[in-house]
Amino acid sequence: MGNLTERQRGLTMAFIGIMVLMPDTILFRLIDTNLWTLMIWRAGFQGAVLWVALLLLRGRKLPEDVRTLGWPGAGFALAMGVAAVCFNLAIAWTTVANTLFILAAMPLWAALLSWLMMGERIDLRMGLTILVAMIGIGILVTGKDEGGVAHWSGDLAALGGSFTMAAGFSLARFAPGRSMVPALAGSTVVPVAFGIAMGGLALPLQGDMGFLFVMGAIIAPLSFALISSAPRYIPSTEVSLIMLLETALAPILVWWIVGEDPGPRAILGGVIVVTALLVSNLVGLRRIRA
Image 1 (cartoon, one colour):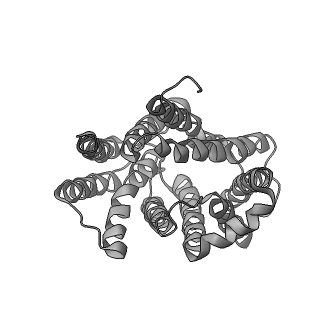
Image 2 (cartoon, one colour):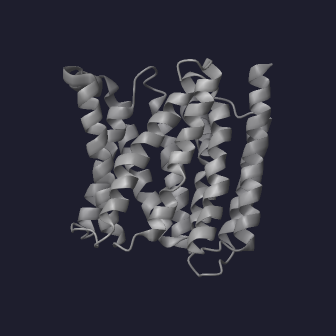
Image 3 (cartoon, rainbow, N blue to C red):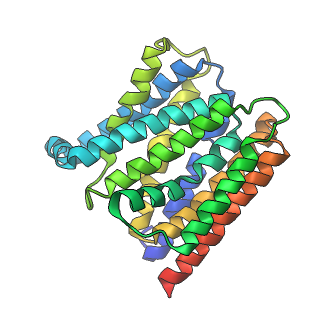
């Protein structure tokens, strides 16, 4: 990327990050190992890769990096750990489409939390976006999918994951300029501990270990590294627009490859959510450039 401009570098990093992340939900559907064991191994691989990378890159500075994060780092780790648990539960208990459309509303919860925690004003654009997105989520969670996968418990888990992820990013704002990668590595303890508590401490079924390694050791850390680094070069609003690609395309890929039909109401509700976020981000990006 040496010959690219800063904007080209940021766009490339965000796009590659999303493309790396895209197969994650497909692999979830191809794994037969029980949910709790899957949760342990996926998070375990992710945590191991992140800690090894941090040790190699930071060395003796790593303990100080962790210490300086303070309570925002601890809160971020807890919130992201709970979000990971919720994501696993959502994928297991409802459709991929419902999960991703509900998770896409994460920036809206972040705006609400910023208002509650920091007193930041919610302008008319964000207020309308929240209202329209809530209508879309209401439509999709009341629909029925053709395969009978969707269930209110999974939708609720996706909503919990969306909210706790937003809480994590809001807490990270109390530690500006500090890398939250050590806290993210620490967050993997939560899904591992939860999976163990639920009796999932076992080897995956034959043939699933490779999938779990790809999900935890490659997809999760690499996509996070690229997507989280992109805002250094382009506005975060532009990154959010690119992230909508995964929200829109992943359910289609799962439908095509696995045959998971989300149903007409989920598609309609998802289109409303994605359109609301798309229009809102485009307006926000236009204001930034102006």
